[in-house]
Length: 206
Image 1 (cartoon, one colour):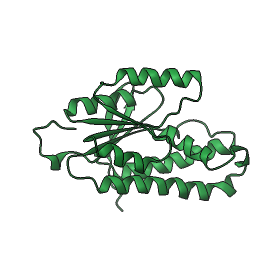
Image 2: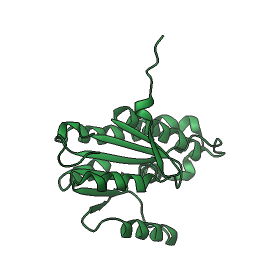
Image 3: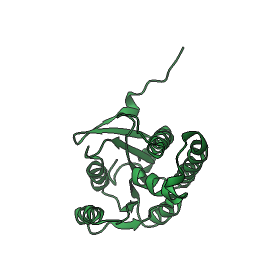
């Protein structure tokens, strides 16, 4: 991120924060936005479906500066990005992990998701189309605007025992790869600390 005195051409258009649960992703995203000195909008994808989630949402809301604009949108990311960019220069999207869960369940009865081979192609393609629409919106932004995307890395544990879990893990992995490829910075979060792994990446050469 940068401050107001920095040339807008140097402002990263897209930043991705990846990590496990409670790795400090949201706090890091909010710190990036706060220290930028620019106007901020927050896109929240979580829905208050139970008491625990309502408590979590309330805690997150109370921790944000009062001058931030919050847009609650569980499904339609491209639309939310357009709304956010109209009122702010820095947009936090928190998070892709919850959005994908919302999106998958919106596709139909989860009880039908029983066979990886019959559901993989349609869900992979549909989710990636949504991400491509998001990236298209960001590519059209004027210089000086930044999107900070929060997402979980869920591919480091055991293979889920049920089909929907495997599809979710696989699709989120592809979604994260698509965002990371377009991002200027990709931070891997552990214990509240972020390392820009995009800068450490080495292109494979024969």
